[in-house]
Amino acid sequence: CSNILNRNVWNAIKPIKRDNLPIPVSSIVVHELRELLNNQSVTQQGCARYINALQNYDMNQRSYDDIGYNFIICGDDENDNTSQQQIYTGRGWKSSGAHCIPYNGKSLG
Image (cartoon, one colour):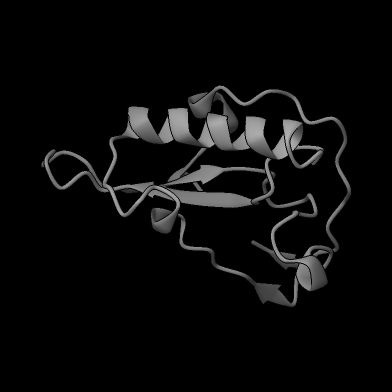
């Protein structure tokens, strides 16, 4: 999918390890991150900083192997008419996430 931004956009660090996700998945788990951002709109640069900080938190505070999410939707700064929501790659298509305990090994989230 050409509209999904890769990990380089948000300066991701290399994951400690990756567990393969069986494909096809049976579920998709959607998480609303705007609540974590206190409902504020952010630019692409702001999203990159936020997602990088989220990866650092997940790895350093939660002891995850990587950012918990497979994909992150962020953006849509209402003060910037050129801004729109973007999809950012977290763990990606083929790696199990750490986003919803009973579904991590069988869903994207």
